[in-house]
Length: 383
Image (cartoon, rainbow, N blue to C red; front, side, top):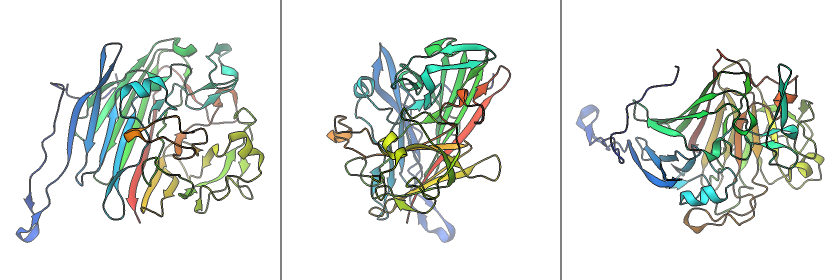
């Protein structure tokens, strides 16, 4: 079995000891390290306790992740003045995530994004999926990976958490028993690395991503329209009125979807363009420019107000840019903040939407004996 092995948490609260002051060259005392890992409870689902893992790096920046949906519930990084701020949208309690959430911070799968009419075919066998987004299946169906409890275990290095979930053959209509491992690692360079691995015992399709909503200004209390977006893509996959790709790989040049140069998200979002009408704003898959396999820069986002900047690097061929078009204030988030229209954006690294029905797109079929393996990094800094 390829799953990583990690030590069992011996009790409900696990703390990795913080390092005390030390002396650098010349005997000068260095600041104490803030690095640590704490494990606590974050409510329960059907009587099953849900653990929360808080990872703090050397400078005190912190990410908090729960077992329910593998959700990133908070991510605190400094602004240009050194003030920490939470840059992801979410809730203060588990009940709110269970009751009504637009995938805040979650692992989405088995198939992130849309599959047309909830159907696909492998080796002559047609599979039917629940339809939960107009005529289509979205993010794995009615109970996707965002709504299950993953088993979390701290990594041996102490700077990450392994999350494991086994999806039964036929779950949400997908074939094969799928074993998945998602590892979050939080580095001293303020990088959140996410590694995904899966195996199956029957041919199936898979497309995993993280669905965090970011706001580099004030964690969802304000608009993201002033954020400056750069997407490393010359082409994208245009969609129909139900947000299913037409199959075309189209040039971005000359369209309001072109972010090859840093542009405020709000600068062209209201232009009269069919694709913006179909998505109610930006909700499109961009084809990442790359010279070959491995990590490539997909996007950079900068908030001029705070100086916070985020790079997204990925091994995936695409990235979905979503501008929070359907946030409308009814989700009351952390600290009682109502998340208003376009108060968060997503950059979901992925294979293309509806790839199982698009023979010219990179394949998402996983077969027995193969291992699905991919990684994405969200890197935070200031300028």
